[in-house]
Image 1 (cartoon, rainbow, N blue to C red):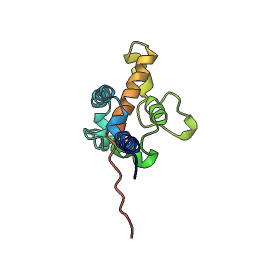
Image 2: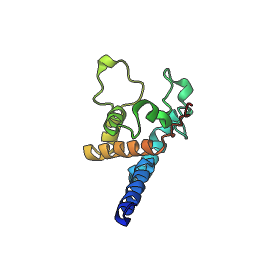
Image 3: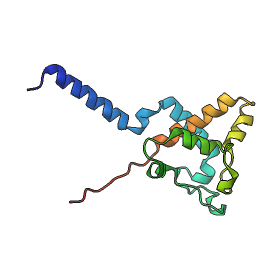
Image 4: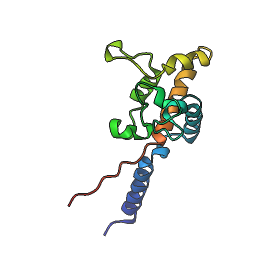
Length: 144
C-alpha cells in the first residue's frame, strides 16, 4: 500500500502534467491576448479570423496562406518558438530557400515600434504565444 506522501506526490505530479499539456497554460494569458490583438491587426487579412488560411485577400495570393491552427502537425506541440519567431520576423531568411510570400514582419514591427528592437521582438513573441494557444489538438485513433 502506498504511503500518503507518495500518493500526494503522484497527485501533484499528475496535476502538473495536465497543466503542462494544456496549450494555454504554457503561455502567459496577457501575452496571448496581446498576440491575438496583433494577429487581428496584421494577420487576419491573409490567414482569416479563425487562422485557417481563408482571409479576404487569400484568394488573390499566388501561394495560399497557411492554416495556422495546424502548425503543431508540422512542427510538433509545443511549437518550436524560436523557429516560428524567425519565420514571422523574416529578416534572417536565406534567399537560396526561394521567394518569401509572407511580409517581413520583423522590419515592419521594428519601424512601427520606433526602431525599438526589443519591442519588435516582444510583438513577435506575443504572436507566437497566440499561435501556440490556437493549435487544434491532433486526434488519433487507436488501432486494435
